[in-house]
Length: 341
Image 1 (spheres, rainbow, N blue to C red):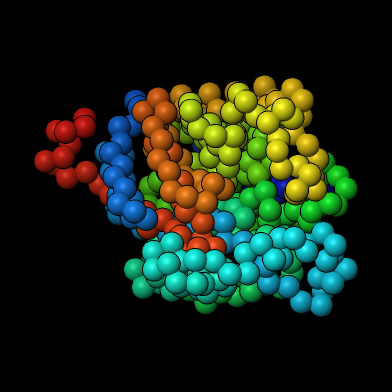
Image 2: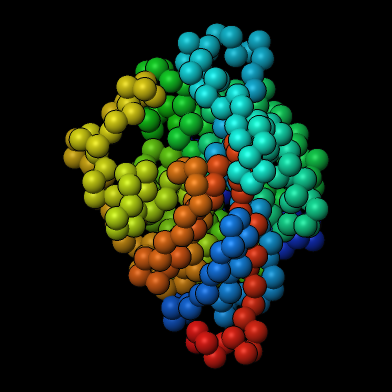
């Protein structure tokens, strides 16, 4: 992908909703505040997230792993690369009712719920698509437009992957972002962008190759230095001790020796040496960031919550089975401030 398209940064208010986007270059550095104390509670898919830094309620509908396989005649030349994933999620089981469903119905039901509860933003955190089908991308853009709700999108490892196509993970990601996924970013940097919503800054950082590059690390470092309360959105969860290799961003066990799916997914094998030092530095900076409220992710197709150095990471169930998170960022009431401050 051409570098200039990646570096297009904007600072744009979305009418009346308090949501803006900020580029790396436009972020103003401020004095770093003291660490933020948070109190997250989780009841199935409903998350209540309390912190002193939250001044106004924010409702987020968090979606990952819809795995849409919708396609049309334009996809015929790519069928040798899409065939397996086009069949992988044709029918699923609803995570609550246990009734048979499918990714299209599940996605529409989740958007309908977001509209019903008047969500402030919808976060689409990767693997919304099983492969970069033009038909599926156009369908999602249309459905999102119909809701009238602002959204944040970041890619997952399947969104840009045609199985068996030659190239490195990074080059294939660049290619299919440029060719297909770019409209979903609404003019923002595909690999890293900041969105301000009612005083909280949401950072969407693409770790869909399991790795972080130097530009992303610099972006995150700069955002920490801003002093703003931050929420990190990534597709692949950050490594937590004892977790499986699917918690692969910063996982010390990640690499060629533990890559069991490269033949099935017909992709480049993970590197022999494991993570780059940049990725490991990112993991360390995330959990040392004093103003990071928490991390929200997907990828593993089941709910999960971890606490690492006092920072909560919350992972959603897969939307292919109608899973989602109903996240409520809430100010602390006076009676509760005494409990955690």
